[in-house]
Image (cartoon, rainbow, N blue to C red; front, side, top):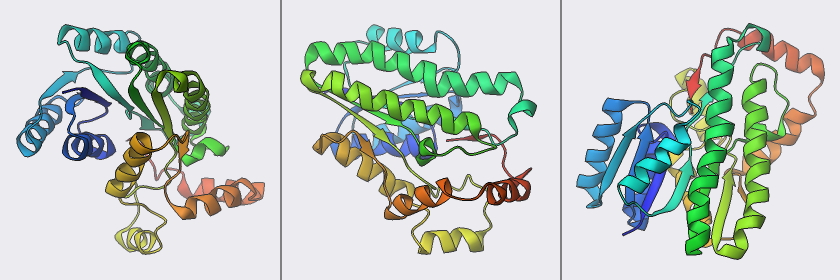
Length: 265
């Protein structure tokens, strides 16, 4: 049985990808994360629930050689990675010039460097086998210039552009590349009050993570699409935000300042 490798797999959307790939597509699962205890528990539960093999790698994916170490781990365990899900990431909401350099480096390493290297290392093997699936988590903010999350939306723009170009390169080799660009997802991480969160759910502005994951994996496995932006509202919200007057954006920034923290996504 082939393997699926998911980064940021110990919790949140990454864990849901891991469970869905085991349950619905019957892959063995390699979970990669910097949350050691949660990682072991998730792997144990997936193995018990879906009768698949699991492997775990506790690693800081923001380190310079993280991708090489992940690839070496897979080679040592003789795991043939057929599905790669680059999910690990962090959202920093802060004015750029007051954001510590270390946090900026962490975000860029996670979203850009390690993601790109994993595609390069594992993608070469997929190309040689003429079969494979690569899912890269971008964001609908890839189309926006949003103050406060300037590094986040810029890095997610890179993920989207890179994935679309890689799709063309990998398509002749039977490898499908998909960029997923979700909007607000109901993971409980965003600091909304329950009343407002309930309103967002009713209006389907916030998407349940299970629906996001199921939709993304279906398109990865069953379509040739380059990009997936789940949720009809997002096709309306993105152009509206992009055409807001500058004064509205600055007012929103003042209201939100201090509300958000560093959020793993």
